[in-house]
Length: 305
Image (cartoon, rainbow, N blue to C red; front, side, top):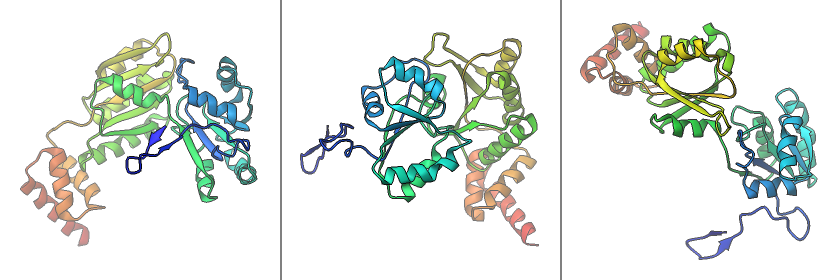
């Protein structure tokens, strides 16, 4: 029950079906599921899945284990990255006709590096009611276990699988840092690419503290902390297994080279005034504001010439 502080009235926020059937349910409810331990499943999530007409699953075979464990008989349908767009029109029409759906992914919170975003957008555009049941999320759990600053953070999920493209993506993040971004980074990665990812991160981001969180909530849960170089060497010699989440510390105050300064300023000037760009880059690099502002003026004049 939730109380309105202004009126003192209470509002029932559970998903109990009304006496007319399932009319009290939203057209679409996003339900978070365990990331490893089947007991990390809330009573409200169980109730929602048992109440809807259909559960949309990333993989029906994977989800069947959870549903059997909790005695949920609701029928399932597959909704994944390969069929989501094609299925949207029929699903929206079904919701408009009164059907109620739940969306779950294989593990964790739906849409977070999982299918469903296009369906949610379509449901919003159609004016349908959407709700959600919060619960497990590997990225946030890893962040809290890492020992690194919990906020602000930037979640980038999976980077490109090839080293060159991955380094380019990391370089983009580094450029944003040079322009003023200061955030703890969160990534997902496949175990067979972990050592290479860490080596690329060390090469692009420099000396940083990091944590590799593996098999969270499962029997072989592991959180290994150290520098990017140390972690890269460890996992090059010890093949990781299971689901992986990587947390990397924000950039610290560091001396910037002239090339770094110019790169940061050009990035900042693309979207800021000279004054604001200089202030942001001076904060990020620790260089004197007067020096950075003077260089920003020079780069601005050169760009207009």
